[in-house]
Image 1 (cartoon, rainbow, N blue to C red):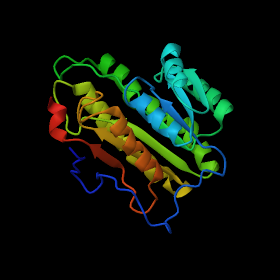
Image 2 (image 1 turned 45 degrees about the vertical axis):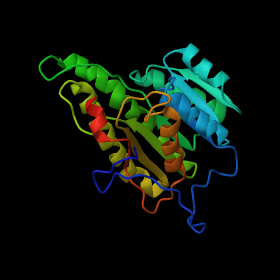
Image 3 (image 1 turned 90 degrees about the horizontal axis):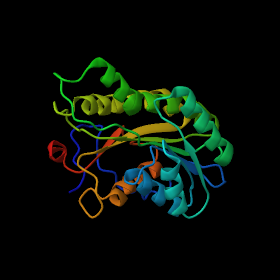
Length: 248
């Protein structure tokens, strides 16, 4: 199933063949991508895709064993760091470690999130705040820490993993978080686009699993397409899959 747009700002990406359109200039050196929330699904697949494309890869997750396992399977240069993305100081420190190892990234990918079952009648404010700190807060912290440096380095791309194309009562905290993430992406793009840093979400509409319509390697292709998409015609969100699949 191909991505299904439901607004003027969500579309399926297509390769751009016009050689006269200037793609991002990565500065003549080996570009790097930082993948935050690097887990065994989309995070690992995006890391593999970018590594094969010649990017140095910085990996960040809460567990050192997770990022070291992914790094061991990648070609080329890698660096790892650990942090809880909800810990602002800890995340900033970890990002500085990756910058020290690989330089300012050309592409930043935010893939962290908390998926839990909850509803409007059972979700308490403290739990909502805790999930929102990961689903949205960490993305904002990462942006504040790196996007100004990316702009100073000549530009780049900030790509965020979203889901929940429509809100579901049984996934209230996730629905609120992913809606907030899409709003954040548009806000950041409006703020930094003039400096050459473009931001967008990839909204994945169904459960991710190898060998299915939501194979993580296929999803990773969308990140690569957004990475290479020129500024003319930039969109803030692309959909992967059928929104009806989000309801299970």
